[in-house]
Amino acid sequence: MSDTAADETPVAVEMLNTADTEQHPPHSSDNLSEKMEKMNISGSSFSIWPPTQRTRDAVINRLIETLSTPSVLSKRYGSLPPDEASSTAKSIEEEAYNAAAASSAPASSATASSIDEGIEILQVYSKEISKRMLDAVKSRAAPPDVSAAPESVRATVASEEVSSSVDNESSY
Image (tube, rainbow, N blue to C red; front, side, top):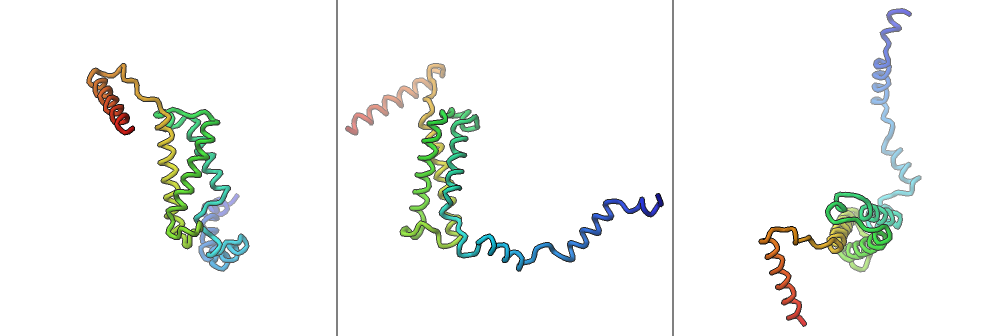
């Protein structure tokens, strides 16, 4: 082998290829428009809200997984059996979807008129899911065991329970 052949390393070849692609970009805006047309994506047919049924199903599946498998949430509040997680997840998603749809400015239309509005509604949907999921696991969690707590904590809990029961009785 000659010394000049050894000097042509793969790095040098890569630099030549890089310089070649910089002069001729692989995608032009015309090419992108053509691809969008082929995929049937145009400014008027693309919307953020409402999500497709496939997306909603994916959200439900993720909720089921989060509620029924070990996670940060389950370490604090416990996990749900898969069948209960499934019904809870469906309920959470449906309630969040309805709340987000109701929050949209044009109440008569379920479809957002602009991408910005769609993003805002999607954020409401996401926050509603998070809030409802946390509410569901908190309501299911067992009350804390106060028997092992110090006397001052037990007294506070007892007085809160008495106060709560008095409030409940007076509301009848």
